[in-house]
Length: 608
Image (cartoon, rainbow, N blue to C red):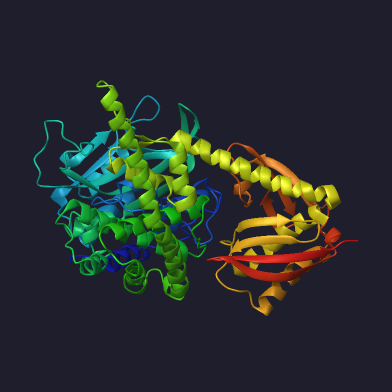
């Protein structure tokens, strides 16, 4: 290969270090709640505060290689280019250099590092509009750096402009490789999809501030944001035409070929399945092994992870791959592909493989039964269609899986709704998603009313043994998260007037020392006599401030959060004690296994 992924990362970082940039490293793939997204989806996203003017502790010239996860187009994964995990090569100027240096360095990268022929490089610049003038400055510097004037194209705002609703914004300038494909017409340019121009990178020049829909003023701190896609560059530089033929995936594909006794690229079904297994396993490894690693669950980011793993299992099953082989694929990514760039994966290898295999085994048990149920649903619809056609020649076949059936596949067999939709489409059917959502809502309402009824039953006897125990549940969860990590979540609870019962995701029995540490954490909070405060705010604001908890609210809905000093900040309907001191003390009475990966703690408190 002309370039390996490791070589490309190193060349990028070294190039910028030689020009005074500091490698700031990568941040967690998991969104921290401040950006409003579940995962980091762009290299510049973690640097947004500094692009907005905050001083960065490492200076004004920065670079890195940032992992990203983007799942909005997960259904496209299986073709030659889409990936859910990808890496962005980034560099930034925060009020430092601007267009002259940036255009020169981009040209040097393309010609001296990546060995592009200058005649093959095309660039685009902002064409201007009634609000902002044409970007002649960037075009001039592009030409001075070595780009041929005839290869400089001016394109409108939709192609060459970066902005948010308010704040820093400005023109961007994209770089393209000119292929041997003939022009599609007299006006062929980089905005065409004819394949003549292949994008390789983008420079964003933040030189304006958007203060209203159509009003822009010069920005005091001018920034440069440069982002080039690692996977895209590897495909192009090595002329593979397929991201799964780069060194990032070639070992995995070869392993799958041997395991399935099938050949990649021979038929569409096998090739698509191999790509999905490889991509989803890679992303799952990255999410579980992340510094803020998550585990599969039915909510939030954990649901996305579960969906990825279960989709990989489904396609492995289709082409005859033993499910244990998915763990072996994970090892390839951990030990060979990302051993240098993501050393944390090696440190967490046993944990990653254990959690990955646990989810695989859990779903595999239900997969065969779920497939039978799916076929049963399809068969029922087809029998109905056949009967109706016999009595009515004009009858149009029904091709809809109703919401209740889709929910049964989810609730009983663990089929994510997206998987059911995908399976249905493969058979020419659609799923009543509205009906599914309604069935899900009814299920949640029933669960809530049942839980509330049990809770109110306790209140009838002694409303104060139950409210205080509810607060103890919050402190217990906070202690477990403090000890074992923020991936720990409540999986169920029950409170009587005598004790609390709390279920959480964990794969083993707590040691005596760990039990004591949890008890000490809760009792320390009790002894500090911390007020328990209820606040209400929109969900998005609550999450931005660090609130967590099980909820089904929309981002703009108002939710209740109970704040216990700096110990816990949890979304909850209540009720709670007024002060932690009301609990007196806390004692874990018993722990036991509930199911695979779920533990149960029973605990008591003393009341004044």
